[in-house]
Image (cartoon, rainbow, N blue to C red):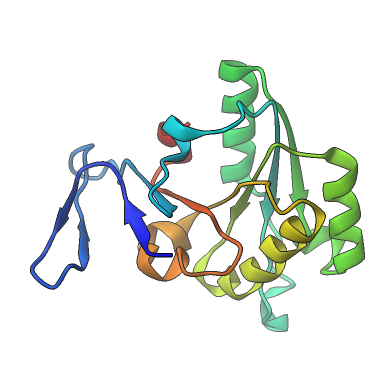
Amino acid sequence: MTPLLFGDCRRERNNVPRLKSNAGPGMGYRQAIGRGGTDFKRDRFVTPSRVLLIKSYSLDPATWKQLNHPIGLMNIAAYLRRNYRYEVKIEDVRVKGNDRFDLESAIRLYAPDVVGISALTHESEAVSWIAGCVKRVNAHTPVLLGGPHATAYPEKAIQIPGVDYLVVGEGEIAC
């Protein structure tokens, strides 16, 4: 499937998408990128009420000592709870470990309508593993990828297996 860009997007001569900010200088992008010509905000087949947000981990053991709170996911969780009354749970794979059985069990127990993954660029190699865990539990659960990697490299990020949509820029704007 060919990735599709939504929002204020201009195509250049060689059909490579060029992103343009809708928000003005320093405000980030306001675009939703999806596979197969669907726009998540407009064409959702189900209104999510249970959202699972997962913080990715790095495959590099040198970064495992650097553990901090997933502030971005915490902000989005608070925003979704306050403005949309969604049930939101955050799974930090960096804390729980990278055991497939544990992650799939957590996904199965929570039974989310939508899963969001946040990743830095050095954590992006684990995203396909996390998305694969989601798809093994329920192949129809939409997987969204956000964070600095999705914003900085959207053309690469949309090609990660298992990722259905990208959140480019501020997640609260995309909600």
